[in-house]
Amino acid sequence: MAVLTLVSKFFGFIREMVMANYFGASYITDAYAMSFTILTVMFGGIIIAISTAYMPLYSRINEHKGKEAGDYFTSLIINFLLSVTVVISILGIIFSDQLIAVLASGFSGETARLASFYVKTLFSFVVFSSTAGILEAYLQYKGVFLPQIVSGYFVSICTIAAIIISAYTSCYYLGFGMLTGYILRFITIAIITGRRRFQYTPVLKYNADVKDTLIMAMPAFLGSCAYSVNQFVDKTLASRLVEGSISALNYASLLNGLIMGLTITILSTVIYPRLTQAVSLKQFDRFSSMLSTGITVVVMIALPFSLGAMMYSGQVVQIVYERGAFDQAATSMTSSAFFFYAGGLLFFSLNELLIKAYYSMGNMKTPMIFSGIGVIINIALSLMLISPMAHSGLALATSIAAFFSTLLLWTGIQRKYEHAVLLGSKGKLLKIFISALLAVGGSYIVYAFIILPLSHVIIMRTVQLGLAVIFAGIVYLAALRLFKVEELDLLRSLIKR
Image (cartoon, rainbow, N blue to C red; front, side, top):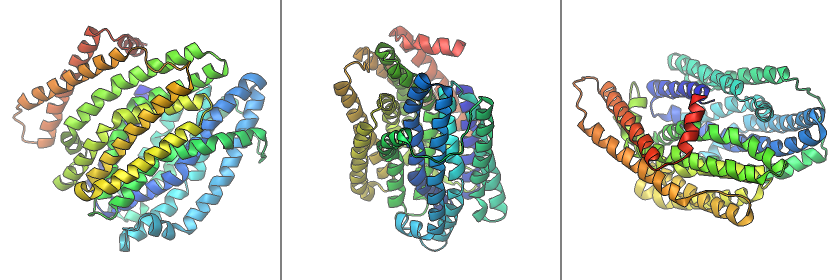
């Protein structure tokens, strides 16, 4: 998964670099980012919530009633989700102008027209995405993770092709790349699921199992929307700032998502079906062992990445994006947002794993409440910080809200579930923090003293940063070994395998 996800993120990386090269931080990228955010808020939460609620119920049905009953239940969920997404897609396409007028009130003229067209295009692929989401959850429970990652390559490859075509023809073609990619992804996942002998039943029926899924999905939907809502609030407020503010937030958020996608998302994706199965079989010691180990590994990975991203935010943005239409001003805007988003990376990561722990126990309501509180905190802080800090204040508000969400999720699970052990040793966190601080702090000394006789600034920065990261990695692993953090052996064994 790590290798294939790395390739997937590489394609996504190239996609954003190509976008930055041809369109920079302009009204075009503002319109595209805003329309995609609207789509994510309206649909992303629904699909994620239903697929998340689907897995515990599917586990119960499959384990106690057999594969045929599990396949029938899966078909009912797919058919229900299809009926909902088709209706909402049609409404979104018809009322795209009104959506932009309300949700991106700072847009006007060509920016508003372009955003409205992108909404029409992007809303068209939701039908394919919704079905693929349920089939992907079905495959994950069956222990199939790799083909779905490969199928995601189509989205980035088609989007890259659309960006290049749009740059030389019309920017209105930009949204068709993602539409084509998601259609190809759906076809691929459908073929893979068919080969796993999934028996689809074309029946639209509202039975007790579907009702239970929706009851569980509703709070999960509201909870899973928290991050998307925070991003939406940021971009809505940023639409009132100078041109390029939305793009800067979007590029910075994508870098943050790249780090999480290569590390934490893999862990939470793999561990969620196993946590669900452990709860179904009442194996609570196994549940606690997996959760405690998962939290420690999250901290081990996210903390050094967070510190490093903050320290080298300017260099990273310059290396990744600064070329073509993406100039130094765009780099400055994006790097400041990336700095504050990176500060919340550890909390974003812990939230993702802790929420999955609640969901595995069938508790969708508590994460929803805590996520709602986080959204309120984010909105309040955004309104306070936007005036003195512009778009950077919006990124800072999101990270602070993530911290409070983590605090609520952590204390909530400790009080409600006595059998859930979150952390075996508090001293281990201190050891990891000291190790990360030594590694990242020492790397900056190496970075500062490396003088390279290279005329090309980007190449020079890349070599400097690469050597600093290698040094940081060596120091970090040595420090963890010195402090005898046993999860390091777990990571080593996984790498060997």
